[in-house]
Amino acid sequence: MAGPDPRESMHKRPPTMGHVPNVTRADAQAALRNPLAFIAARWTPDPRTVRRAALTALVMAVVIVVTGGAVRLTGSGLGCPTWPKCTEDSLTSTREMGLHGVIEFGNRLLTYVLCAAVGWAIIAARSEKPYRRGLTRLGWVQFWIVMGNAILGGIVVLVGLNPYTVAAHFLLSTALIAVATAMWQRTREGDAEPRPLVGTAVRQLVWFMVAASVLLIAVGTVVTGAGPHAGDSSEVPRMPLDWETVSKVHAVLAWIVVTLTFALWFVLKAVDAPRDPLARTRELFLILLAQGVIGYVQYFTDLPEVLVGLHMFGSCVMWIWVLRVLLSLRERPGATAPDAAVPAAQEPATSASIAGPR
Image (tube, rainbow, N blue to C red):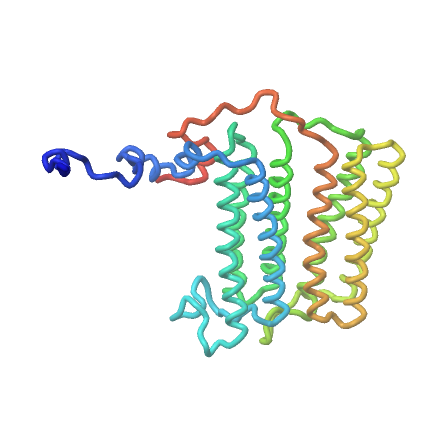
C-alpha cells in the first residue's frame, strides 16, 4: 500500500492557532490619542453594568469618608507626617511609624481604589449606547472632586490637621457623595426632560429639607472641629467654640430635618403621591431616627470612637437618602431625542476639555 506523497506534504500550510486581530498603527495611535473613545467604539456595556459601576463609585465615596474618620478617631491623622510621600525619605509607611503610619497610609491607598471605581464609572457611561453626555459628565465631575480632595487632604497634613481644612475636606467628600448619588440615579432613568410627580408646594418643602440637611452636615463639621477628637495625639488646634453649645445647635437642626421629613411624608400621603417618593421619605425618616439615637448615646457617653465612626457613616447614608427623596419627585421616562452616537475617533468637548491640553 503506497504511503503519502512527500511532495504533497511540502505544499501544505501549517495549522493556524486561531484568528489574531490585526491592530494597525492607526488603531494604536487612536488608542493613545483618545483611549475612552477607542474603548467605546469596541465595547457596549449592559445597562446593569453601568448601574453597578455608578453604585461602586458611590459605595467607595462612602468608604473613603468612613476610613478617613477612622484615621482621625485613632489619632493617626499625622501618621504620615508629610505629603505626597509618607515621610521625607519613604513613599510608604515604615516600621518605626507603627500602627498610626499603617492606618494613615492605608487610607491614602484607598484613594487609588476610589479613583479606579470612578474611572470604571466614566468608562462604562462613555461606552453606553446611545451615548449619554450628561451621565458621562457626572462621572468626570466625580473625578475632579476626587483629585481636588486628594490635594486638600495633603494640605490638611501639611498644616498639621487645621480644623478648618479638615472640615473642608469632609464637605468636599459630601459633595462627591451627592454627585455619585445623582449619577447612580441617572443610570436608572432615561434622558427625556424631567417630569414632576408632585406639585410645586411639595417640591419647595423638599428643598427646605435639603437646605436644612446641608446646614446640619456643615454644623456637624464644626462639632468635629471643636470637639475632643483632634485626629492626632499631639497638640492640634481646635475651633475656638464651646463644643457643647455647638452640639446643641446641631441637635436642634437634626430635629428640624426630622420634622420636615415627617411633614413631607404626611403631605405626600394627603395628596396621594406616587409610591416612590413615599417609600424614600419613609426610609429617610427611619434613618434619621436611628442617626438621632446614635447621636444622643454618643453625647451622653463621652464620644466613644466606635459610636462617632458609626455616626459619620449614618451621616453619609442620611445625605444619600435626602438626595434620593429629592430625585424621586420627578421622572425621566426615556429619551425622546437621544444623543447621536459619538464617532469613535472623537470625544465630546466636555471630556476633551477636562483632559486638558496634550
